[in-house]
Structure formats: C-alpha cells, structure tokens
Length: 472
Ligand SMILES: CC(C)[C@H](C(=O)O)[C@@H](O)C(=O)O
Ligand code: SF4
Image (cartoon, rainbow, N blue to C red):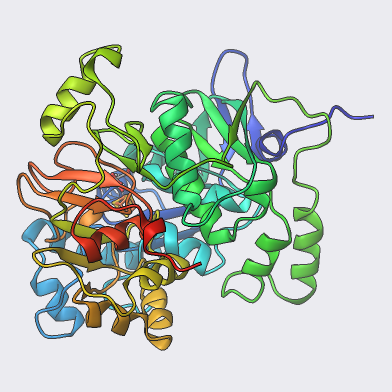
C-alpha cells in the first residue's frame, strides 16, 4: 500500500515540476490573482524583458485596496474622483496592464469587483486541489477550499506571470484539531483569534496549518474562510481545510466552477484530496472550543487577544517589553477588564469578515437598535455581489436605520489606503485581521473581534459581551 499522505502532500506532489537537492522546489501554479497594489512593478518587469503572461487564462485581476468606498455622485467616476493620485494611478495601471496582457480583470467599473480573497471563491475561481498565489498575505483565505494558497512578493508575482511556476521551499505540516462545540455568540473569528493567542504570531512559522476536527467540519464555507484567512497572522505559510460536501455545495453553479460532466469528474477528484487515514503531520495542536468566549484583541499584534470578559494581562506576566509597549500605544490599563471601554469607531468588513453571513450576523445585533451616540460605524461588503445580495434581503436598511454607513465594496478601513481611516487616539472595534500600530490610520487603536462583537460595540458604544444582547 502507498504511504498515507496529508492533503498538503497530495497537492504539493501533484504540482511539483522539479526538485533539486538543497534547493527550492519548482511548483506549478494553477491560479494567480492580481490586485492593484502589488502588481504594477511585476508588469513593468515583463514589459522591460519583452515577456508575455504565460497563462492569461489562469490569471485574474481585481481592484480592492485603493478604490474609495464612497462616491462623490453615486457613479464609478465619482468613486475614482475621491481617490488620491497614487490610488487613481494604481487602479488605471491595473486596468491597462490587464488589457495589454490579455488578463480578465474586474476593474473599477466592473459590477463583479471586490476584495481579491472574496471574489476568487465567490466566482468559483478558487477550487479544491489547486495551487493559488497572489501578491497578498491573506491569500491563505483560499485554503478553506482545500487549495494550497499563499501570498508572494512582487518579484514572485512577475515570475509566476512569466512562467506559471514558483520557487518554494517545502513547508512542514501542522494539524490544528478543533474539538468541542461552539457556544452561543462564539464564531469562527473567535476560534482563529483564540488559536493565535495560544500559539502566538510566530507559532505557525514554517508550517502549513491544516484545520481538522468536528468544529471545522460543521463550519460553513464563509466561516472556514475566516479561519484560513488569519492563518498568516500566526506566521503560517498557508491554512488548509479538506474539501467536503459543504465545499462542493458552495461551488456548484458558480461562474468559473466546472459544469456538467466536468463537474462530476472534478468532484470525484476532489473527494480524494482529504488526508489519508494514518497520514503524519510534523506537529499537532489541539484547541478545545467548548468553553471559548467571544474574543477581542487588546494589543498591537493579532496574538494579543483574550476572552471578552477577561482582564488585560499584567505587566509582570509579560516575557518581554512587547506588552508594555503595546499597552502604552493602546493606552489600556494592564490587569483591568476591557468590557465597558469606550469605542469610537466600528468597522465591519475586510477579507476576514465581509461576506453575506458576516453581514447577517452584524444585522442580527443591530436590527431595531441604534448606533450609540458619538460612534461611527462603517459596514463594507467584500464584493459588489455581496452588496447586491445584502440589499436584496434588506440588510443595508438594517444598518442605515441604525445609523451606520453602508459603503461600496473594497478593503476600506482594514488598511486605510482609500480614504477610510480612524483618527489618532481613536479606538476601533474591527472585524479585520491586523491591529498593528497605525494600521487603520495614524495613531489609531484597533481591537479585532467578530462581526457579532463589533455590532455589539456599535450599539452600546463600549466593548461589550455580545451574548448579553442575543435572545436565544
Ligand atoms: C497591500 C498588500 C500587500 C497587503 C498584504 O499583503 O496583505 C494588504 O492586503 C494587507 O492586508 O496588509
Ligand atoms: S481586506 Fe485588508 S487584509 Fe484583506 S486584502 Fe484588503 S487590506 Fe489586505
């Protein structure tokens, strides 16, 4: 009998073009996603060397980071009018590069654009067993489909555009077994925040994390994407979840998913991907979520997170000066609870939590309630399709009736490159994935949490345990 293989090993071996001893492997890439921030130099490089894109049909572009989520007059031109010069140039450049190199692109005027990690799955481009790259760290999101997906640098973007291959050292595998069952008000976002708090922001370095166990199996695709999205925040090369019926059901009928007999053949192939019985991981971490509470971060990296009812760590408990510096930046008192702390801004969006189910969760809390006095709330769908779907079920109305702003799709306040940002000293509860100093605006203070917890802060104006606001 053949040696049992993990999901990772199956995909890796299937895409291995060449492997010399003591050098990185040459890996075939099935899909490259492109956005406006990390691609301009790559295309310039191709042009300078007189190269073409090797597989334009395996390359898809969208605009997301720089495009404003407001429009001066409701039109696309009105959105571009609000962009600064650099942003406008990046967006125009992406569209021009896509035209010149024959790549399909969802530019500013497309009604299918959105955050790159949201539209890939939504369009059915992301499929099990694929290798997927993008010049963006949160490419790990696509691992939710059982695809080996990771972020690459701009010179590698150029390399993949030119050759459809990538040089990669083989990472190790770490199984993350999620056991138990989730209680009311505790979500996929809380699982991943708890994992990163447990293993640390370097806990996954050198590994591909494969999430397994009953809790993962019970998650929807959108929830699985939230988990895989933040694998990179634990330092991992990628996150993976084996495909199953939930995956196939999500993909069936999507624009770029296989159709007819091709679909049947694809599903038959995909069913063989899950790790074999007895396959060996280099390491296993177990997380029991039975007693997990909603999580929130208090510091300046995503590993500085705690249960919402906990007290901030004391400085004596810290192993280095990192905590002291983080709490000084956040202006939060060591050893004290965070519950009840004032919040100035709430951001519901980003490639972590801007899909329809995230918006439904936030709406569940905000329906019939009002945004607290003095709080600014931005709700930003991850794609134009999500925006339309949300509006079709009246979610936009729930948010605007409450007093929140309902925006056009994009990265928005996750990264503050598009006009959406918080002010120095302000506190934001954000459903995004990074709480670094200045990430959401210079001097801004970010607390990462789930859409439920963010919505709870929106209506109370303070850090709140959402479980006190949920009925059942
Ligand atoms: C702009 C891009 C390179 C960056 C990334 O790689 O992740 C951004 O998406 C982010 O979230 O910080
Ligand atoms: S939403 Fe945020 S994390 Fe995701 S791709 Fe955009 S900037 Fe990066």
